[in-house]
Image 1 (tube, helix red, strand yellow):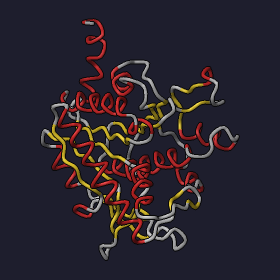
Image 2 (cartoon, helix red, strand yellow; image 1 turned 90 degrees about the vertical axis):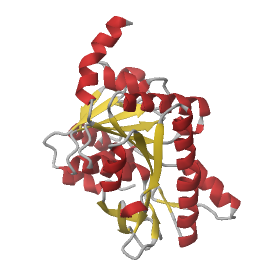
Image 3 (cartoon, one colour; image 1 turned 90 degrees about the horizontal axis):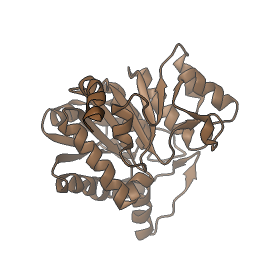
Image 4 (cartoon, helix red, strand yellow; image 1 turned 180 degrees about the horizontal axis):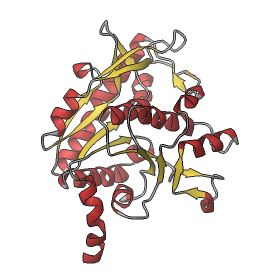
Length: 290
């Protein structure tokens, strides 16, 4: 045990006082045992002097809320069609249910947390992404002041991803994209995207093909060869957005694995897939659509 702590010391010093943005959702959120383990790790990071910013989605909670009010769910190109009522119900589910549940659980673990949404202080400003999708927002600006104020305290900012336009209308916003843009604007030392897979594979699901590290150009090659498709592409697109804003490194990580955050940040080997910026023309990624 002492040797383990000594080995982790350089990594602890690296991240102390730095910002780490964590996007949290999926199976890591719906399983109560996994959820408590993840939040315990996040609280440990904050206790160690790391400025943790927790950004979350909540698709299952939104679906439950829409079912309760008899609203049908339709997806277009992987994005939820959203009318005005759906956008308001989604905000209730995310900000009123999921967000406050995370805040409560962090406080039960002995930490402090402040729950906010993208409409607070116009944190996430948007315009309409398309007429076809309705009230789905395209992020135009991230105002980080409220996040930075909370981060200077003992509390962890817990952010529900909704957006607001110049007229005060509420929009649904893709959580991966919002988290990545927040990470970029905050110039985070690391952006960690928790999902329900360990990371990227050259030939999924062959475990021997797991990639512990890759560059954006390497990802482009995998996409072109058909090795990456479906729901992973929006996550990679989100990371690309963050890198356009100044982020240098991001990690895809399996949030279902106990202590995966600690293993990723404080060991030489890491645990997920580390994605680094290279000389790839980042504009090429703009052709990737949800």
